[in-house]
Length: 201
Image (cartoon, rainbow, N blue to C red; front, side, top):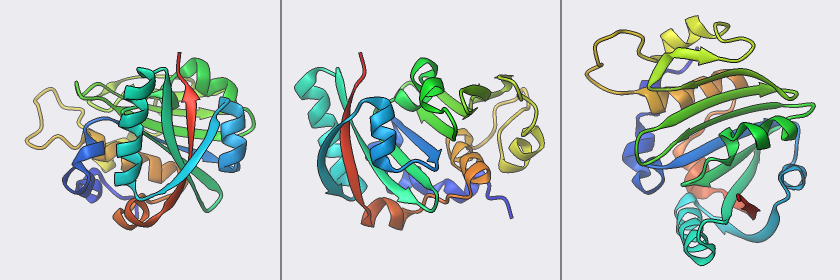
């Protein structure tokens, strides 16, 4: 059964330090080392739990004025999960599309200004991209392929604003629909993440 945005409402409540600005990316069939090779990352010390990752990411940002960003990775089944606190590399098309050769790349991002992006790429082709708060405006080679799923998950297509904005949680649910990978509190709290820093600009 397809999860909905309501099934991921816990994220903002349980993890407020990262929930206000993040990028979650899932890449099929590449190990963390292979993914970092494609993104020209530099290996860093592993960290346990998302709280430690967030703290290190903000320290890294201050250290290098945002030029290099810390990311955390772990393997989930046949996918690598890449987490960027206060990051956006996973939805940057000129970095993502070359790195997606031969694989699937699903990413969603939100920043402190509530600007967001959901991106789905397959083998260097952008299939779908949209802002989760404005799902009616979609682009890519398959902008309508997931429309029925998006409506079931809880993206809001009506003109009137919803009572509860579930656009960000719905992005987690849509990523799970495409990958089969469920993000859970236990995964975020208990995982020892492989870490790296990546040149952003």
